[in-house]
Structure formats: C-alpha cells, structure tokens
Image 1 (cartoon, rainbow, N blue to C red):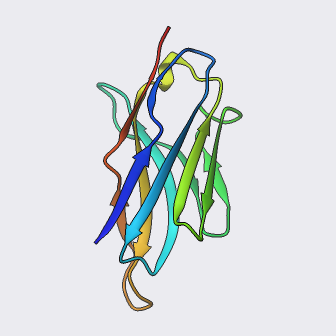
Image 2: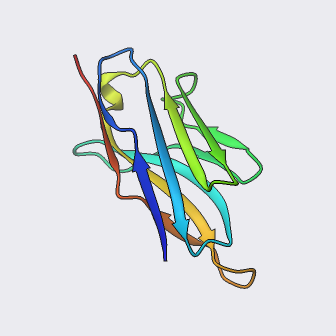
Length: 121
C-alpha cells in the first residue's frame, strides 16, 4: 500500500502565498510522474502542475508564473509553491503520483486525500 499525505493548505488573502507539500510512503520502488490537481466547488478536477522523475515540469496556463512545482526524489515528496494567489485559486488541491512496487510491476496511480486552499479577504 502507498499513501500520499498532503499538508500546507489553509486560508490566505489575495496576493498571498502558500506552500503545499505531499509525502509518499509505503511499498514504493519507484515514482514516475508526480503532480498537483485541484477541484473547485461545482467544477471538474483540473491539472495544476506535474513533474517527472528527471525534473521536467508542466504548469497549467492559469498558474504559470505564479506556481512552481518541485520534488525531492530521495524523500519521495512533491511540493507546490503558490504565489500571488487569486480568489479563483480556491479549491481542494490533490497530490498525485504514478508509482510501482518493483521492476516488474505496472505503474499505478495514487491520489492524496486533498487539502483545501481558500483565497479570500
């Protein structure tokens, strides 16, 4: 079993910053892609940012220049630094990881439980 535990959500004023972190633990041999998705009330879950094992990143257009994804392969963690936050960034943020338990195992997708980010004055 693999668990993803997120932390760092909360209430912040517009223009402020937050840093989300996600730690993977359990039967992990290798983690491929890691990322962050979010789901606002009444909307579908959407991609925020992803990062591969070699550090290649992608960011949604809506967060480019404001959010930065990073990871620590030794610690199996992924972080999301969020700056210049806007009310429309309010959502539950989910950590995501593709992992496998051995060389012969397929990669499986795992989601965290989500952490709420609220941007409001």
